[in-house]
Length: 541
Ligand code: ATP
Image (cartoon, rainbow, N blue to C red):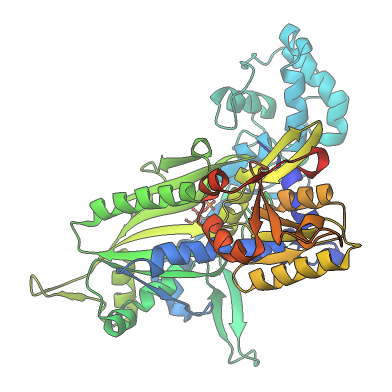
């Protein structure tokens, strides 16, 4: 699997994602989508919208405001309890989520370095003196407040290497032994290695805002931490306007804001992000079945757009993790470079939200069931995914490095519907004006239907590699044969190259649009059988 540094560097170099306010030193918790990133992210959103709203009869969409009445957040329970436990290091002043502290230590620079020592031959002889030696050497710089400066043979050896990951109980025991009763969490600071971590306290994730220019009369509210509440408070409006019958759902894509304690891992955890959420309203009693259906559908959705089976899994929430009102919750997790982490949560929220808003607003949010002639408060199934996390996961999953005839090729095997650029039109010789003109005309025509680019800024081999690296599924090359060489007339044909197989076929310009439409439907294998193949040679593969 590709590491995060490689992904961040590719994203910056090729214009997918830049750090926010970079020329001012950057804002660690925010990222800007560049020319390719915006196309790519828009494709993720558009496919989600098409599959979950436009192709279904039981779904409608909504685009609610980001700022909402402050009472919404009291009713939803966010003001009182939307918080994460945090702990702070008294030595270096960094803050961490207490419930994710083992992962933070596991992924820290100093522990990654120490792990190599722990798994080496010196540790097999005497692990504590190996750790102490590390602390006197490399550890001095990486973890200046690391506690173990002398060997401590009195500490019972607790370790069983190699540790399997941040969840491994041997890893926890090892850390506890190092901390030696220095703090209640039993871990060291992921930044400086110190033991002075404060006892966990809740920190609100709500981002407060004041709306209105005059301090005294301004409305104090919050930037929404999720899009869901905009849907609940509009339940009756949508019901009346759309005349939908249960079961039906309302979908929304939009920005959300959370004062995360430790934003990080690139766009995985940020303070400003986008969500794609569905609130699916059902008759109580049918909720468990609908919940399972949504779990299956959402799990299949990621794989439909190319996410590899082995990198995606479902994780059932334990009783302690469940929100008090939730009946069941299942996360879809992706194997990110830092380990399995949530992509989307699918919860059975019962009738909690509608009832809360009904109580706080004084408005009935009941549904009249014509079959039973009774009023009821629907149960809600909520598939709630992150746009940024999905975009990142699709990108990581598509990243491949391979060797082609002795050269390294980086290729993003993005599903064609996700790829930011669908077609690149490339002239084989930019000195020949007829070739350049033909290529430009083809590109202008194709742009009417697909995102297409023209590029003549390098040799053909390099142009192909560039398009491979950004995931462009098809390249069209115009060459001398297309336009003729003055003696022999042109054949009015171009070469289409498939990104993944690097196979090439030769087709008439007059058929190009029809053929491209077929290719966009995924028919390369069929076309290869009927179109003449073009031989590939060395660097132009
Ligand atoms: P986590 O446990 O990772 O903090 P969560 O369970 O709080 O996530 P939800 O409240 O279920 O997340 O939000 C639904 C989705 O929104 C998540 O699955 C994720 O894809 C996305 N999301 C939540 N918080 C963030 C964030 N800080 N940055 C980016 N995406 C986020």
